[in-house]
Each structure stands twice: as C-alpha cells, then as structure tokens.
Length: 202
Image (cartoon, rainbow, N blue to C red; front, side, top):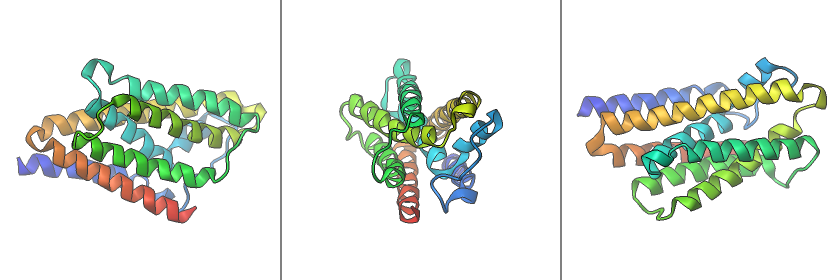
C-alpha cells in the first residue's frame, strides 16, 4: 500500500514539474496566430493546473455517470468567454483572478476529499466562473486573423488536459483506495499552494 501511495505522489510531482518552466508568469506569452501556438499555450502553469484539477475533481466529486459535466462545463464557458475576449471584453485584475482560480480548484479538491462540498452544483458554478476568466484572457490575446486555428489548438489541448486530470483521479482511486481521501487532500493542497505562488508572481 505504501508503494501505491508513493506512486500517486510521484504522479503529482510529475504534473507539477511539468509546469516548472512557466512558474514565473501565469501566461507564458506564446504566439497566438497558429494551431501549434494554440496547442502549446495551455501548458502554462495556471491553465495546466486548472485543467488537471477540473478532471480530478469531476471523478472525485461527481457520480460516475456525470463525471463528464466538469470538463464540458469548463470547455463551454471557455469557448463563449474567449469569443467575448476576442471582441475586447475584459475585467479588472484578470491575471490575479486567474491565479486565484488555481487556489480555488485546489481547495475544491480538499473539500471534495473531506466531503464538505455538499452540492456539486457549487463546484460546477465555480468551474464555469474560472473558465470564463481563462477564456477572456486568452481570447483577448488572439488577433482576428489567427483566432480559428489558435482556438482549435487551444481547445484540443484543454480537452487533453481534462482527460489527463480524469486519468489521474481514476488512478488515485485504484492505487490507493483506502487512502484516497489523504491523497486527494494532498493533491488539492499542493495545487492551492501552487496557485498562491502564481498569485505572488502577477
């Protein structure tokens, strides 16, 4: 059992290390006029951690037959707000709010582990709100001439990251079923801490 818990912790470490090159800035400043730029842009720390958290939360807090609702909620809100962002809509302190969304998602994982979030609808509402912030920010970065290709790549990678989060959540459940509460709390705490660090960098 200790080996299984260790494996889950290693998976968490790899996910966090993957974001190391971009810790200094919430948004990494990739170009925004091509499919490849859209595929690589979500690998910034804020977006990557948020996507993984949404996937893990969905399989942890929602019934098995409704686990798709978290990623789909995020994707729909992301698409709609990206269109608005591309038209010039913005909100004050958006970078700070995006970094704070990572803290919120980490806290959601902790609350899910402790069974403190009684209604999953609250979680879905927070996911939609955070996705709207991400969409506004990334939509604002995109010129009209390159929006379609960039948006397709961005959404495709976002979906892949959601799937990765779901896979991590399911793996944690299988590998350490007796200690899944502890593992989920640790993962949520690590993500919330990462979000706080991002908040100090914007």
